[in-house]
Length: 154
Image 1 (cartoon, rainbow, N blue to C red):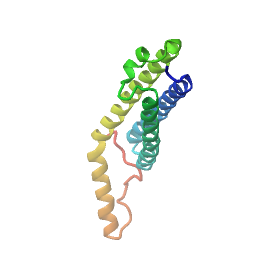
Image 2 (image 1 turned 120 degrees about the vertical axis):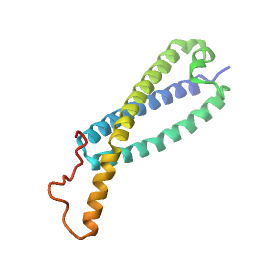
Image 3 (image 1 turned 90 degrees about the horizontal axis):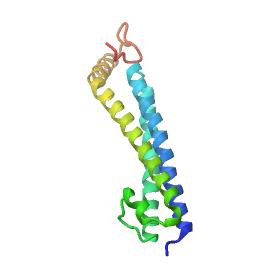
Image 4 (image 1 turned 135 degrees about the vertical axis):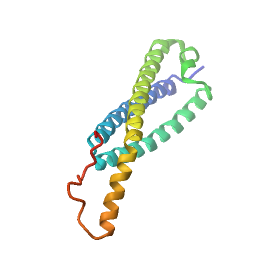
């Protein structure tokens, strides 16, 4: 018999993972906007936030693995949880799994847009940084008209 307390804790953990995916989605969108505006500092800030959240996701993944082991479901993919979970929690399990899937899909989409935007503008970023580094190495002020932010819209 499956431990219902552990099962409910497991479902709560899946919801926490989903909430974390939503936070990452917001950051990805902020990063995309920052790249489009040429706000390099904001891009870096977003990337630091992503790193912190990624660490917390790793911790959640470890906890999830231990809980699945306790439940006798080690190695069972998310898509099979509804079938393998307790009958009395079937609807709740289905709702939690669907919510997590949707949140993950939205995150993946936002992440892809951010990645594509960064890739498209990477050459511009590199050229601006090189020009600024060259000017600084010569001991001069930033080049005339050189923005403190990169304009990627050109």
